[in-house]
Image 1 (spheres, rainbow over the protein chains, first blue to last red):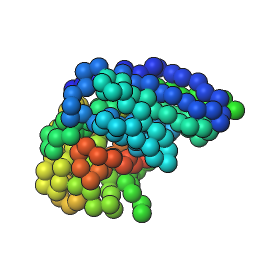
Image 2: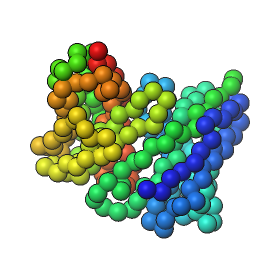
Image 3: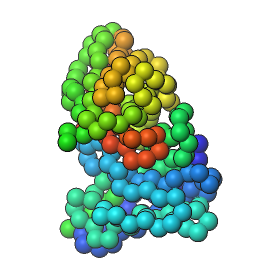
Image 4: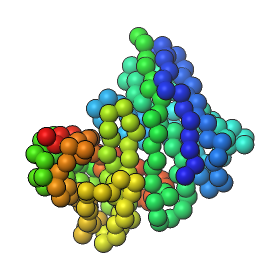
Length: 114
Length: 112
């Protein structure tokens, strides 16, 4: 399985943008880049995913490098509620088998200061 | 919508006891899976199912059984609980194996 590398922790100030990096140098052409977050004492929550083009939704933006070996999750204005562990995950666009399952690393713990 | 519902939220077992963790989803998702999360770690896949009647093993299946008789339900059985199975268990569902996954709130299990 293709692996991802994320910083263990990051800090941000409330109402400022946050850029969470993820390296995935062994990504293959069929791997989607997924981001999930986990708030304290809760289950993981889907944030965003993409394949090649940058993606935006109501929660965040995903910027994908042209060579796809890295990506950045962008929270445009961090709130205290955004304090969580953020996981960058590669998922294979391949029906069946375990290759489509989410392979979680340790993620990046984001702290947001008021 | 209730989404993915896990019961119970907390459970304490004695070593050797058996129990079933329940997971139900009301989104008509074909794909369901079970993960465990140990302190300071990411989630690890235990078992998964791509539809009713079809299950397969994940990364850490030993000590756990699953079955999928309906689309809605995917129970996880611990046959003989061991202290190493102390963990938080999460159930997830999705329309397919590689799209958005929805997680339950977790079951915190302690085996003494």
